[in-house]
Amino acid sequence: MNNWTWDRLRVFDALARTGSVAAAARSLCMTGPAVSQHLRRLEVEVGAALVERAGRGLRLTGAGHVLAGHARTVARAVEHAERDLAGHTGELHGTVRVGAISSAIRGFLLRRVREFTDRYPRVRVSLCDGETVDHLRALHEDGLDVVVAESWHDLPSTISRGADVTRLRTERVRLVLPDGHRLANRDTVRFSELAEEVWTCCPPGSDAHSTLAQLVRRAGAELRVGFPVADHATQLEVVANGLAVACIPEPSLPREPSGVRIVETDPAPLRSIELVTQSKTLPLHVHEFVTSLTGR
Image (cartoon, rainbow, N blue to C red):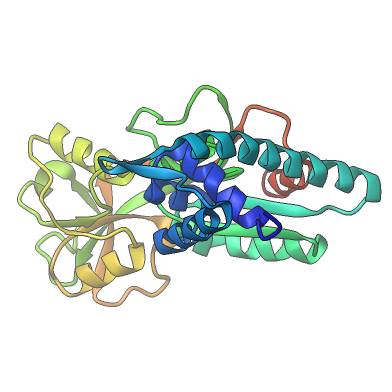
């Protein structure tokens, strides 16, 4: 028992809440093997099996149910202790767990995180990228404190009504064509003119994919994705090599395009970047981080 660590209990708490190694890893911004290693070590230290296989997920054993309740209690106690200590000493402590889309991380988050940690050196910011739908699930399961999400204006929001949402910015999305494309000299292209094109875009299940599919379908065609790629920089490389076309938000576009032509579309998609937290009183260090991003 003396060998138990907060990290292992924190991982087990996530496993108990999410029901799988993969989901726990997403909520903690860890790898699946790291989660499994924590679990194996904890079972050795406890001297009992804590989980058993149940299809693709995990089911708690009797011992697992007992420990899960205590792990949740410990997790909440640590959160309260960090908040109270910050208020008592006047210095913020703790970890802010942030999930964000990669374009927001590159575009502005890394700079803002550096500024925040320079100001509060005893606060650690854990930042992991991924799809908004996965991050919102982790936020609901208490695996993340803050989500920097994308919200496409042509798609109903997937953000829960029980969350606090602040819009950080709105971005235009533009069409990227290979140099020499039949439409490359146009100022504006209608989606109906792209019916036969092969696309590169974020994978199925993402909001970006769903929005693009809807825009193409409204133009009387079906989206043909030959290169499902989550990263905008890689999408640009696919287009530059003449393999596909893409719709990419302006902040991710190169200042000096090479091998591609950037044009407007009709209609013009819009994407908002939003900061999402649970609707509850946040620990002081998390509240201060949110304030640093939103100014609220």
